[in-house]
Amino acid sequence: MARKTGSHAEITGPRLRAVARDLFARHGYAAVSMRQIAAGVGVQAGALYLYTPDKQALLFELMRGHMDDLLAALAAEPMPADPCGRLAAFARFHVHFHLDRPAEVFIAYMELRNLTPENFAVLERQRHAYEDALEAILRDGAATGAFRVPDAKLATRALIAMLTGVTQWFRDGGRLGRAEVGAIYAEMALRAVGA
Image 1 (cartoon, rainbow, N blue to C red):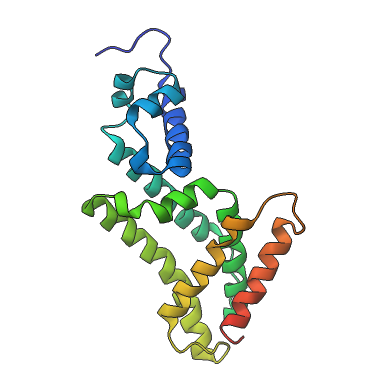
Image 2: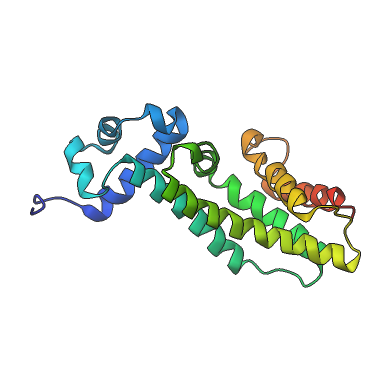
């Protein structure tokens, strides 16, 4: 089927994802219809299927894209050699990355339950890859005596929950800026593991 003259796939596709992201974050995946997404994009509902097979595929694309971006950004982040420096750098990275993407973070955590088992498995592997990076830092720190961590996996999950929680309350223009919040969270992460 040929596109209509004036159709702009390079505009409509990203707009579709942005509208879906905002609607899913505001109302929840289950409460949002493809018709609502189409209205937000400014196209007929049927036109959405030129860009996505269905709403599930759209949710999965948003969540996988968020995790792809997170993992790529972490891989590109310069990390010090010592465990304390690496943990502090990881904490600052996590806070700053997530503060820039509150809608994506909300969807990534709240909408896992709405993924098909196959899509959930993909996201779970990505989440484990990210957690493994932090767990390796904690294990290295424990091995050198820099950290006191009785259970590195549990500590990893606790730290990620703490660091991600900043997206719930932080607002630009508040008492503390992003850099200050990142530095304080890095210090709290180090104290949490007995550094």
